[in-house]
Length: 293
Image: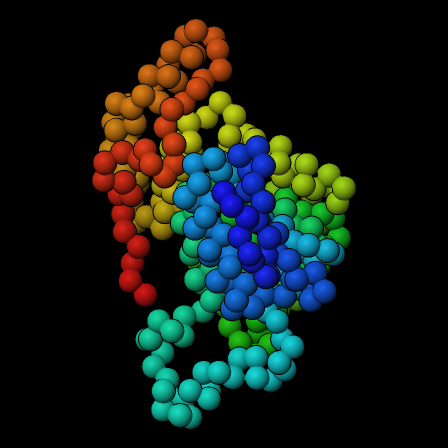
């Protein structure tokens, strides 16, 4: 993967792990629409690169992401109001989609597992963008908040779907309806962050976790199971899972990966799975489609 010329993030690939770094340290990695575009581009690149088997997202400097860039003051959220005054506003027009939601849907659709290495403050979109990631590792004492009610706005990043599923409805409402600041230690206690480690071992820990998604496992199986697990959170009946799993295990059972998995087990050796992502999915995959906006 050639190194792209990003201006708000950095992307590096080493040992089959892609590291995406929010790279506006002087602004505590505050989020902008351009950062959204670059992050989505980075995930497009990691999806398309068969050498990438896992993705880590972290921040440069002392913060993970301090939320939306508010440097324009009251004008920050005023573009819609100006459009309405000009008679150009249609709330069903995709041009007005929440960029946090666009980003989080892109992360949710990642072909590779995603790990958040939360190196400091994570506020607003900084705290919602970690929700569709599969693993969240943080450092003690980092400030976190979902302060939307304190800014007079509302959820972004599909958080009203993600957060209750990650931490439960009571905690989601506690944090969101008060907009209060809490520390990563509380986030760990309530299940938002899975592991807390000291800053000097954060990236090492994240890379160790990434290797668990790489070593001795089939890339196609990892990607398919990630996709299915997230989507079944919204299923209305276990029969939906049964249908998809039946189709998946039958197709995967016919693959060269399945033969290698069985033979490596019987021969007591490490497997060398030939299947790659995104080229070797079974016919018909994915088994569902993205709804229209």
